[in-house]
Amino acid sequence: MKFTILSLFPQMLESYFQSSIMARAVERRLIAYELVDIRDYATDRHRTCDDAPYGGGYGMVLKAEPLSAALDAVFARDKRVVYASPAGELFRQETARRLSLEDELVMICGRYEGIDQRVIDLYVHDQLSIGDYVVSSGEVATLAIVDAVYRLVAGVITPGSLEEESHNDSLLEYPHYTRPEVFRGHAVPEVLLSGHHGQISEWRRWKQIERTAAVRPDLLAGAGITTSEMVELETKYGGQDGSDHGG
Image (cartoon, rainbow, N blue to C red; front, side, top):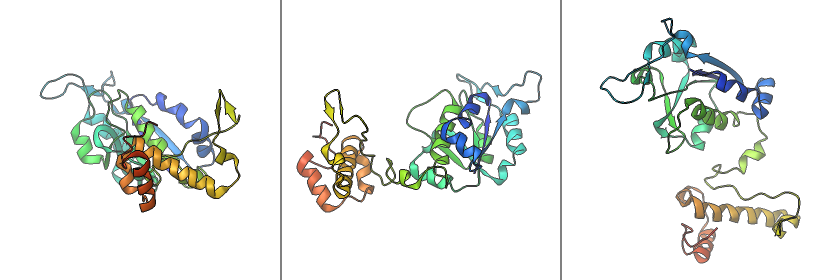
């Protein structure tokens, strides 16, 4: 899979692709990337890529001409184009799975007040928000999407590790422990030391349900909770929303 990323600050992105799991994926040719400097496609000597918005208001807007020229240079009309924006639909794990099946993604890093709407209308397939907040760097938001997507590409991460993660089955992940057995008076739960895989699986499943009910009860509806699990949840915490659960 290839990520082609258009940015005013491509130097912010380079180190990400040269570090950790991503670096290994690039080395193994599971992932490829190309960083495109939008300023290279500006036509004036100052390499201007932004201008004041029509209608007035604060801030600046990325101009359509250099950005569209950069998109044309990477043949974006033949590929899936993603733009990270707080005005987009909420980015979810299922979206990451869908995008991970693409051969290439062209990604636009916004800045300032955003990009000219005509670029969105002409090129963008997915306008995605990483959450109900705003960051000043489109590079940060874009990398969050890249990170969620590339790790789902076949061969990048051991499949078993992906199966038990938060949001894989609409439940949040269970808590993890490692050595030492006792840390500052807090011991590892005995069941994890028992070697009884069936009991460990049951414990982990229940911890997923508890955590989801306490923190993200909105996810429970799609989590495949059994009738007996729901009854136990209601018995312990007074309802599926976990409102009586203190942690």
